[in-house]
Amino acid sequence: MPDDPTVVKRILRAELRERRRNMPAHEREQSTEGFTSRLQELVGSTGATSLSCYLSMPTEPDTRPFVNWAEANGIRVLFPITREDGLLDWTVGEDEAEVTGLHGMPEPVGELLGPMAINDVDLILVPAAAVDATGMRLGWGRGYFDKTLGSMGKCPPVYAIVFDGEFVEEVPREVHDQPVNGVVTPTRIVAF
Image 1: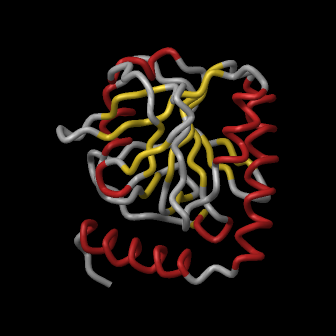
Image 2 (image 1 turned 120 degrees about the vertical axis):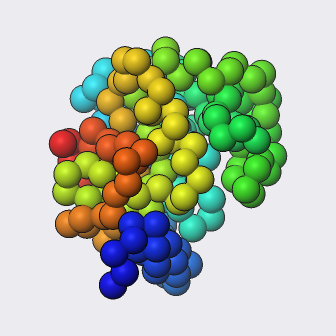
């Protein structure tokens, strides 16, 4: 195995992408039910009345049923909107429509609230390729969430959403990588 964390990350991401692509449909459906239940539990235990959450890609843990539940229960949900400069804008997606953003990510349509809007949420839910036992998150390599979390003065709890097999012993890390406060899988919530 190479020593360069950048190379190790690239190899690990490729393996995780392939594993997600090959996940059977019934396993993905069961995982979605588990994610929705665990995320509802997390909201209940934190008392969050506002949160940020991403819209999932087809191979990612499906966040849509949870987001629908949160909005139906009066929880304000901010969604990330990618920008060319590597920062994230935010929207509440009041138009209930989606577009394909930069890098092919699904993004809701709505008024852009700017990068600082995330400072007002009680809970942040982020995507990840993997999370290790210390709370270090391996993202997908674009750095959007690392930049956002690293720039926040006072950050609410941050939880990464991963499949059970992506909660691992250790992930490679670099100076700019930001840890999370916990991880949500289909079967459990782990706080660090």
